Image (cartoon, rainbow, N blue to C red):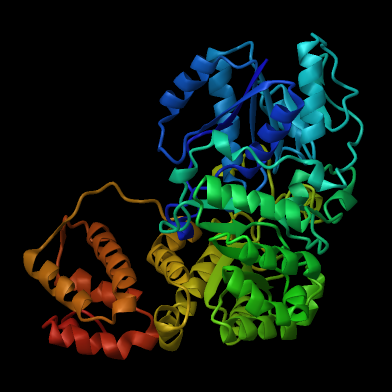
Length: 575
């Protein structure tokens, strides 16, 4: 029996630039299935080689698998947007291989198993929760020719035209029983993070999270009948983690990794053992982790060791502005711990990434701006804004269905990527939520001392390249946040306007030059289109500079415009 694990063509978060890592869900399942000898596994990942959809279909036809597996467990691949691409792939694969069984699992599918089967007749099975044991049992039954799967634990299937679900599947308590992910079936040398980190991988060395924040994407990959599964945190041991790191580094040449566990640093002893093991074994990798502020603060003495072992960036959730709000969203950390974490990471030359939430149920404009003020004062190095997106299986999901804020009949999963606002609040429309999110992102990166620190501070060069990639794509984030559609109308530039634009950009501080060029150029061309002109003139350039350059830089911008002999006073009211 052959089983093919398929990743169709899809992009990544716009703030991440060119970003593509091996599918951790697939790699772990392949290793398990191969070890158990229940099927011959294959992997096709269309992303690193930019394979067209039609070419991917041809590769699948050549394998002629008995079973296809589709799914993801990491929201860093693009939130829930990949789900649309998985469902579309299932439909197209079934057209050419109608006898092949199609199995899905992971994010979204686990929590919405019934809806998945009813809306996607080309999908035969949904694995709910952890997939190893369930997939093994399913493959054995398929090989034996069985047709009734209704009693398989952790599996949803169709029976007599109706979606049915088997019993709850117990969690794997000891993750060390799992083999090292099968990276050998993936083109490891071709994966890249944030356009510059090569070769690159993302890891998951634990499952669940002790926090259980009400907004977390992980709710959607566990059995909705057993909410405690999500908060049942389990981890691989330090030796097991080090074994995987050695394979990645010494066999596949991977140089940069992100531990995508929601809270890598829960267990202080394991963190210390992993760090010392990386140093002792000379594992030459730079790495990033996600951690909770309370764990960071309780492990301050480990941070120098973590840096020595290769950590160069650390993520924590800022999310909101007060301890009361943090409690309300189930975060169970304090604003003091958040500020302290950012301070201590900066002290040790480790760049901090603060996640920030916009669009919570009771958000209004004043509340979002107060929240932004706190984030601005806490001062993480990178401001990673995401729009609150309801998660199937989470405490919010049914409430928002009942309110009519979510309509499964009409939602477009391609926009459920955490970078498009998809629901209103009690006080704001979806458009208002997007407008305020775009404002927050622009304002945060407009502070002169902050941008100077990012590029000139004592941070690792990989961290600075990440910032560069992030800032260069803010315009794309704003387009997604405000739902702007790229125009297809061609425009050209007046030669004199082009010259003055280029001269102005060249005189800007180096660390603002690229982002200013991208944002002002796009705005100039959009203004030309709005004015029904096919030509960008000095008027559009001057107006774009004033609209796009943040207030903190207006004085410097006026000086530079004068030096470039672009008389903005003819077109723009300075006030």
